[in-house]
Length: 456
Image (spheres, rainbow, N blue to C red):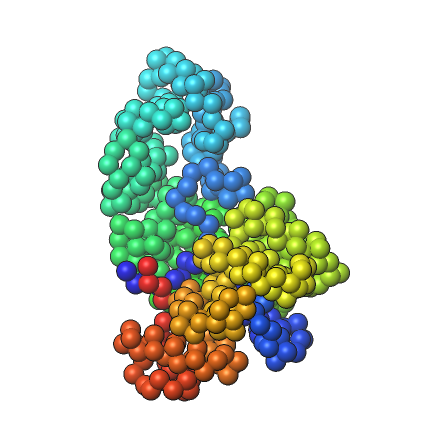
């Protein structure tokens, strides 16, 4: 299956960073490996309940329920339910004590069987106890009587196959019903369905509209994803300045992913002026929440001495923390330290191992650097065909650095590599010119055709 890689994070090019930092671009590009920047603008996972506290949907202003709180409210009130009792704290699904909530809400339903919020909260308790069929029955009962939050819960059941066969079309129908009742979380999921082509044809314009509506309802994840779509879409006009504004709005509203994304933009001067103090502040804030992208970005600033006194040891410590938290770009950065001998004893074998691990995690610059190792024979036998294969992967994963290298600095790569890449492109009927290692207009056109278009 061929699809555009718009939802995959990419690293920014060394040449652009060097220019922004006033460095010698030619000298920077002569380094054997691409100097990887922090991962750029990765979207949060969609359709997840009870994400980390900074990423959960911010509830709409609740209606005041003028009754005293019942134990069912205390134990099972949903923060996304704007008809809940507001005098007491709501309970995130991840923190819900299923057994206690089940007993309390069963009792509440016996004494007040027509109170819709008790029916809904009883469903939450059953869902927590993994009685998905029972939970869905209660959600349907509440929805049939017009309880807004229940529509989203039924949609979620269809979306995830909980208590019923998974059905994206039905899930979208129910999310629309919930969205029509002012549920910001449901609006977000309608947006995501259009964004990802789930249950409907992919439609970025519709997705953006729903993200905006959800954001206006207080959903911080929608704020972030509106920014990501404006940054990366191929079907609505990209607006990098507007994307930066959405990331900042999300960050200021407490969205951790938005914090990391606005920090990336501020660090690299994307969509506005570079702002190293601002980048440092947002990275540090997101790092406190354990965001792996932010930990890596903070490491990059210390390793490089950007906005802070250079501290390679601290940078490496942060890179390793980010890598342990699953950040693939941090693995690339550790590999680069082994490749260059700055921060680690130079060891091409170790560098290649880290690059391979980063590539397994989808980091585009890692593909580029593995290609470079095969081309130059660094810690491995030189192999032009392997180098070309890895470079194609880098290009298809949207490595802007790789595209710039092939366009502006292809002479830094061996003739054998250049011919092997042309041959790969010709074998795929993308390139029709000679296999001569000359990267003229036809080769560049072929490279542009595969850039950012993955083959899964």
